[in-house]
Length: 317
Image (cartoon, rainbow, N blue to C red; front, side, top):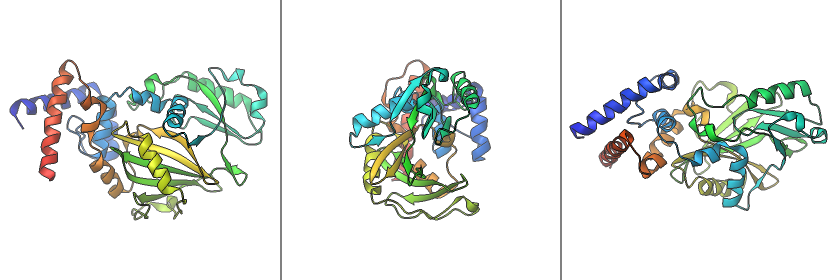
């Protein structure tokens, strides 16, 4: 590495620390390693780098739940998705008839901002209070999740996906790096609402259970549609250098759920083998930031980073 590139990358690292101390510290707290978002190699550093530098305009589509549904169906028309019954900015305007069955109330501009309604059993005071809070908050600000900034602030109601008269219990999540699945996992809710997980290699074989994982892990069988689901995940995420894509499978039909631009805010999973695999296969040279012209000092930083990444890749060969 040239002396000039070393100076540029060191200065960029210092700028990251001074400009984004909060999200820097959060990355350190969960990884235990002093972050280097200016020269990202680990899974955690790459997500921190994404938050600070890689502001791909398509992240706004991926973080906007309604827009992501439209995108998924435009790319893969064979997909299904939960039917949207209503959307708006004020939950007081929801037609009462829509709340008499099995539906889910969601915030379009956040993650895990959901409220499930079973058989019309709804506490309207709680629903109105919660949705009003959603509408007055910008999701992701605390953790530097830039992509949510331009997601439309809306409340919407969608039909609940049901299997055997219960909310669909299984969700399949694919972590795709540069068009190829790094790993997948199934997430299942038991009768008490606890989440059980099972990780898989790209070919669908079970990944070893990490030590100390407790009772959160269970052996879950993959559906016959797994390979087709994987192929769809890789098609949907083609424009991104790394993305998580989630699905349900009900009666042989594949339903798109959502994208995760910053899964677990970049913390990664407890299974370090798969986390490192995702980090190693994720080539940020294919990112928006490094494939589009930058301006100002970022132009010089992007050029220096590309040269450094090329040198790292050359040493690996």
